[in-house]
Image (cartoon, rainbow, N blue to C red; front, side):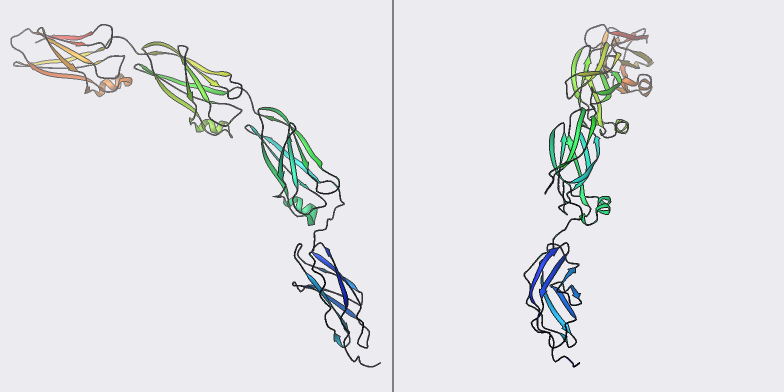
Length: 411
């Protein structure tokens, strides 16, 4: 046995076949073994540098490559003298995904169909055994389809189906009116087997007439104020409320902040309150509120109140009349139930009339009559001559009706 005189010549006709993250290379043996048996071949992918070797076999698979990237392969033969020259490069080839499920229609599941306000949230997953990447899914609500791409991360699917990866989840929010609906999901196939139903659910979306309450009706002179809340189960938006005062309707948008309503009805938000004041006459009134339905146009009573707006002739007092020499000082207060404004007071002094406005601050009057505030006091100083002069005070009624005598003194 002698030492080989030279290395083998180059392998010939390198052929390549793409696989999943791999390339299978095959070739013909060199025309010369260099004088000694060839004991190994080495195939190398370019540009990655990854390789595979054989103990004389004329094919092997190079692994660890990137699907979709382009590679060429060269092969060298080795004998006891060393490695011979590289073969000519193979044709360029790209590794491709290879399934580990039998070909057929998609697999997957409709995991959930959750009703909301005017919509249904649908979620699940699907994949096609003949495709590594995401596929389409169709969501049907009562036969009407919405297309989505099942490309959401689902680690559980990735763990269960290995090389298919995890990007096979889908979520869709599909508009739906109030009531019961049939929801179905389908995986849309890309190869043999067509599409596949992933599941169906019966779902009931909230519906019905509005909910709410007429919480309060407060009164003030020639005015009443209403407050409450209303929402429609069919929508999260603020709705309109009809207010009737003695059967005369007005409408108001229930969009005032009511965090208590938001807490009680999560998902609807907290812009469902209403507050409004209306001018009205004094006397007895019937106040009602109705939530207006956004879907059917119907109404739901929210409540009624019976209230009395203050009215009547003025009232008050001539509190004090003092005289010092020819100087007389008077003071008192007056309120007209029909207004919070200062009323006019007439002082009649010995047949002469002195007109005043009862607009001075009187905290004690404000405490006693909180609807009217504190600016209802009056005071005046004037000169008289002689004695036994009568001094009388009259509150002047607003509008129709009579004036009110507040008191008389003699000075």
